[in-house]
Image (cartoon, rainbow, N blue to C red):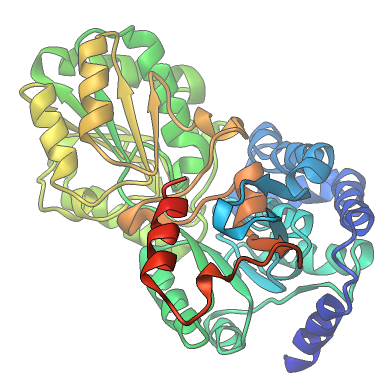
Length: 457
């Protein structure tokens, strides 16, 4: 293991990764890798998660291509020094901020979007001028193997490496010293990563998860609301970190919403979702069993779905009404196609419900009432918030993506990704001319009065 890390470290310290021409060449090579292996990527994602080609295209393949295009377009501007003012006490002189790469960074991806969640951060790390070690999730084995096979064929092997393996290999990898670590995955593993990083005081970005609430107000377009929630929740069979985890709705609107959600599920996935070409599968039998346990424990609350097929790791889009708040489905991140619906008396109670729990990665609010929109926006905290839609905010590269509190720390996407993998180094340049003696000892009352006068300028 140390051999390839030493190779990457030596490459970085040689200065090879810093020229913009080299960074662009690697981004273009990554683009070529995607375009020349598009069908192989779809096949791997189908094998891992039964993703249909359309879903794979919009949420993985095209997503990374757009990132590459954005970075190539803006790399010169983002990497340029930023001039800042210089105070009177430091004149004559000038000051600037210079983005510089950290060095060798470790990117650990998650299995639910096994292409996007390693390559999108990698694009940002390359753009910032770093060497990269990629650790794809071993649970998405087909995609992991594909990346391990393709990346050495297209990218500079002296600057990039793919490291595969399970818990034992990952534990060994985390004992090594990196200049930056980015991890996407569960809160529990995030804590392990952070403890490992603390050994060398390595900075980290943690993209975790949590229970992202979806609040539905009384004044909404119920059909559009249901369609948008169903799309966001059952995309990738619910295995999305920012999927709506549960719905809060008033009793007055509950029945209408439940019927609209049922109709939307049937419209999009048919009477028998098992036969739908557009509906995914659970990643493995362990996660299948975990999600089924939520259903079994709250069977009496089912109002739609609940069908399962262990052999095919299939769980139908499932709706629950008012499950016990202390049950697993309401205490743990579901990360699957089960959507609890919880009644509240009013929007104030919905806000209190959210505030009483850990800060989520995303919060969704469907409403045409501006007063309520303002109240939810101002009184709740979340990594991201979306009004009258869900998940779709991810398509905007002008918005950073990241968590807060238990849902993570740090952010990326677009310029924020470049900033994440760059240290903004302050540089002050002084002239040898006009060296004022006021700061030198011996200190006199006159110098002190003069200094106070200058400090006010």
